[in-house]
Image (tube, rainbow, N blue to C red; front, side, top):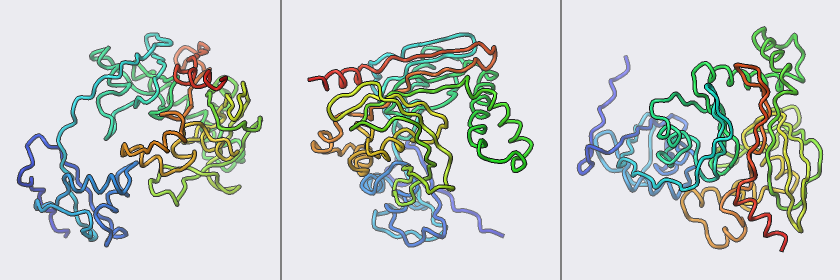
Length: 358
């Protein structure tokens, strides 16, 4: 019988209002420094940030303070204690409604605004701000956008709409993944979903606008993606070898050109994590302002820690990556009505592009 786990003791000096999070050390992490172990457990957290977290409140279950260089053992538990989040100042940029009916809300998400609460961004998020405007209303994100990405975001206003839209988009994703797989290799459930999704192939079109360093070749980029195992933050994707990874296809068209830059339209045939950014970077034309796939991937961690240098900012040119969810064509999942949703290019990208004329 497994020994009972020890209770977590509130350390001396830690207020009742503090919030606790506990991590168990798996055998494969035994012997790691505390800060290194936490950097593997906390998403988008660098060693520098993890060290500060340890110094601010990492303890054993018995309440003994841990140091960043202390070593962990298999099955150890580490308790992080922190004060409750402070109320964030609300972003003055409004969230514009592009379309609304009884079941669906479509908004134009501003850049640098998280869509839902995270460990770092908890109050000033799209879903929190919408909930404050609609007290007691049902609101559920149908899909997500990165914090830095601006543009079209779909929000369900009923549980039925939430299920229907998510199923429709899931069926389309399954159909895209199954296009190169023989029917007899698919389960009945996957085959039915793939057939439903295939019927939607020409009715669901998602187009992004991006500003790139350099001009990418036009046409379809057909390159599977996989998680980059060499990236310490475990969030970076890369082009996989042929026959491996997740199917990923992006159709690229150059709309306008400036010396050293291009404004491009990217139509997604699949929807993988960071797909457009990875595909464009693989052409040698990364998205302007991209901290992960641009000049130096270490900028992502420095940005998360608010430690970007003046040189970093000069090289990035923008405070965020220049990617905008511009157009979404799809049938209404409940009524079948065709929707053609458009979000104009975000003001910061309009200004940046206009300045490239000079």
